[in-house]
Image 1 (cartoon, rainbow, N blue to C red):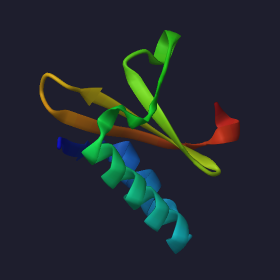
Image 2 (cartoon, helix red, strand yellow):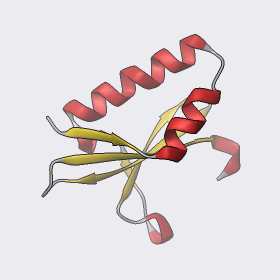
Image 3 (cartoon, helix red, strand yellow):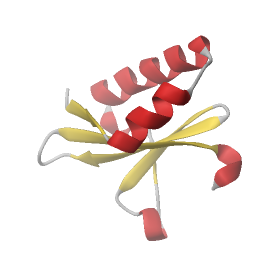
Image 4 (cartoon, rainbow, N blue to C red):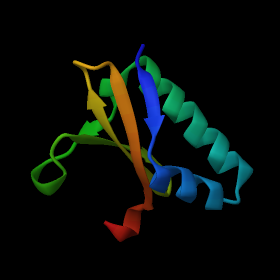
Length: 82
């Protein structure tokens, strides 16, 4: 398993989510990422080096650094804001 570090932007956006069920789903997905960091879809082009996981209607963006054993949770954004 790897260590998970939360970006300040991620913390701020997570705190603004009002739906408790959505927060619980995000927490469960973060736990899955901690166990298997390569679960998310690898991104291309400008977002190369990051991965995303879809949690309807949001996308959870993170960077996995296998050599350091770290996962940086970067962003939560709405699917339509890509």
